Image 1: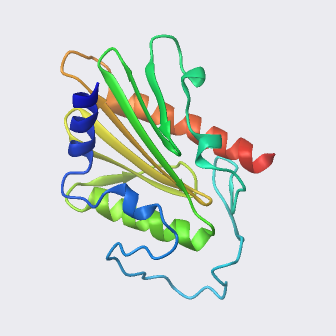
Image 2: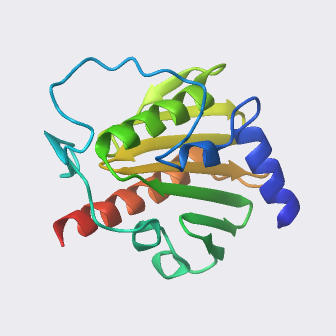
Image 3: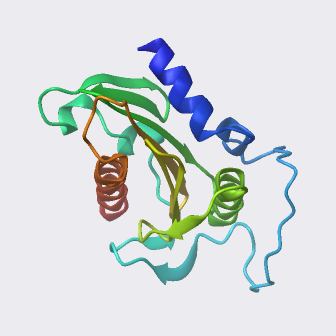
Length: 193
């Protein structure tokens, strides 16, 4: 399992700054500059009033990554692995591997910056598609058997790496999307509670 995880992480982040660089709201020096237009809102503003197609509003959710991450209890029989730390999980099942990293941020502006960094890190040398998870999202396929889905849902930034081994007939995009949808549902539930 450890070798498979190292491989999926190395392929998904080849040439990129690790996601861990996005997890801090304070003192983070990821090297990017913000190109945000003035909106008249302060960084402490909790809501922009926007909402996503999955019912989320762009306001700070008082929850931790551990409250919204997928666990083994959420999965069908046959999956192994589990939560490995605050906002990190790794699962595998019959040639399918999924790595999840979720970070939360103190305000929407910090989450937007972290998402922008995540997107630029993962799409710099690869074409990407937009996905409709949360407020904004992307999907990249940096290799034949791997898909990276990243999105921002309110103050959470999520990265889902899905990978298949050669012997698997599973489509990494399909099961990667399934995990992303489970996370969005948990974040939406956290916001509505």
